Image (cartoon, rainbow, N blue to C red; front, side):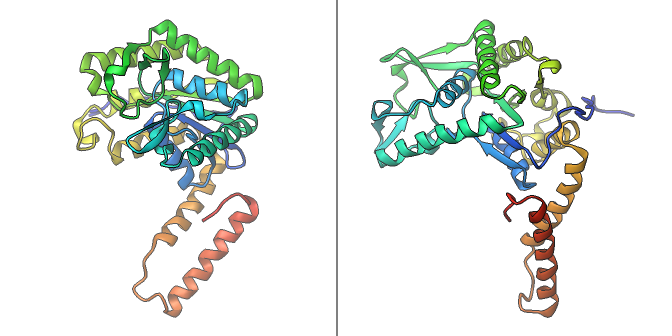
Length: 316
């Protein structure tokens, strides 16, 4: 008896992810989960230089800034709650020192531009189509930074607006890296603060906007993380205590699906070696000074050295 509907995947044959290539990840917090998995297995990743970004306009603005190599200035910063912030970046970059924040933002611009030129894949996770427009400047922000809500207008991007933003992102990426493979996905995190119906409407707009441009021939793909969560894992036992975010079981399950579809077979073998090393490094011996443990460390270092000779960028 089969008690679950499964989304099947075929291994991506033409542009799979391999250890020798650079992978860029942008978007909502679910991109962080996939990025953490890729980092654990020592893929060469570049992840959310401006912090978590939730809606397509925020990602589009990041790409425009990076590809045009536009520098941030003090005019882009504001001070509230004893910290300096930027409306185009997540609060993770905010700082009590204005100069440190400015330097971080401009370093992120340079690193993003450099990465986009050489990345083999970019994974873009969209979380919501709801946006906040700062009334004073009439600009849509990436993050409100706890500025009073009365200073914003809450707006839902239409399907056409999502579509236009997705199209602009693709055009920007292809302008600096024509061979890049783009993987869009919609975050399975439910934005229930917007409302149950409003969350579903938001996700629907994202899905409709993305799928107008999915085209395997042009290396533009869609990975169904949202659909896996909503269909295969349609049970609250796969949610964290807040009943909004996927729990570790769900994240691991979706990761296994991603790996099945996108990780090259030769890299799967390398991942097995890396996992052995990672478990070895996490091992806590009863007697660190014992001959047996010292021999274990020598063998573990030999495995690390062998891998690093093949992949010099790997650090353990």
